[in-house]
Length: 546
Image (cartoon, rainbow, N blue to C red):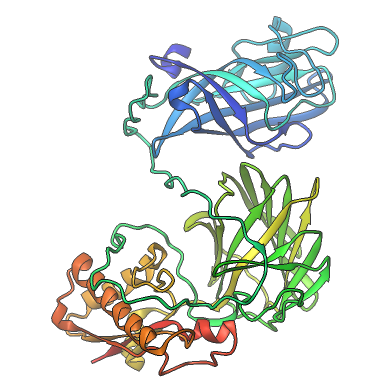
């Protein structure tokens, strides 16, 4: 039976755990991830699985039982389904065949198999056992399952392996997939392989202590008329930024040594750091930030760009409250190589869900929350991580961001921007009823007419509206804030309007005769240019029915 499950050409893989696992910290269903150390052609790949059983204390005749799977290998942009069999373990201190507390790991007798039979994870295939404090490890097969489970049992209150522990497994492709046996690129999975996000670019220089304020939009010389644009038709990011800005801050009106003017601060004071045009409100000790907003609409979005430095262990909690009663927690448990997102309702308590994801903290993380008509989704770097429905929240009138930094000094969490907005209306409905559609969801690189990839959902919606109404003609207007040279802003707004037209015609086959463009620079502001929130409102694209 095992031969049929594991398949041909198994590969010996040594995995370094990226998170702690054990009966005292893990629950059934928690995700587990590790980084491949060997073989060399897989080194750096991520291997993932989940906890299938976690029982502490005096069950199974005084034994603790812990089971988990490794079921996915992410290699070369492909998620490869795998099965794996346990071979050996080394704890985080470098001691072989014991867990963190020195509980021995070695071959089991039949007594362990008999004891584990009632755990609900299937029959024990093979195991390890020791003396009075011995442990038992083996591979188990759940009823009807095709994924092998690694099972650990110990005559002790708990079993624990810390991050950095190394586990050697023998892995093979599952459901027809194949694990590469050389440095050649991974073959596409024949079953459920899916692309993984591209590797992040090299880290930018660290943000240092702030000096003079940097402009929100640095002036640049005009670029070439044609700018290469990202592919908008196939990008799958489902996050659409809200349209009407309720709160925005990029810290461009804050000076070094000042309190953040748009936040109430409790606990340790954050500090402003800056490097070039990048400005960052940096939390270096335990404290809370309360953005100056009095209420949120029922349907809203939240976006933030967050940078971690010197990370060892940081816990960041977004708390949404109604009339002084906490309603929703979104907690980020940040470790050097991963992040857990845990979302829960508070009144009464109900965990909505959690997810563990590998992280590259050398780059800022883009976090987003989308709430609409009882549905709630959480995104990181444009990728949907959690999705719930029938989430009924009362009117939110207070938002808190509480941060705890656990461990040695030198850690920091920095906010580079933060935005709350009312959810985006449907393009077709708005253009039909008012004749004008204003969007802040078409984003550009700073000082450039290159459209950012996260603009795809908005552009796709406009293209669908043009497709369903073949008689619709549009004027595309580009608008900027007033920072920088007026003539350069005018030119930039023209090029940005042309860029939107170019994407609609080249990628969505919209007849160019249906689209005209105009650049208005900063001549028609929606709000004051004296605040970050006002400038954010003024940077926009408008589409006008002709």
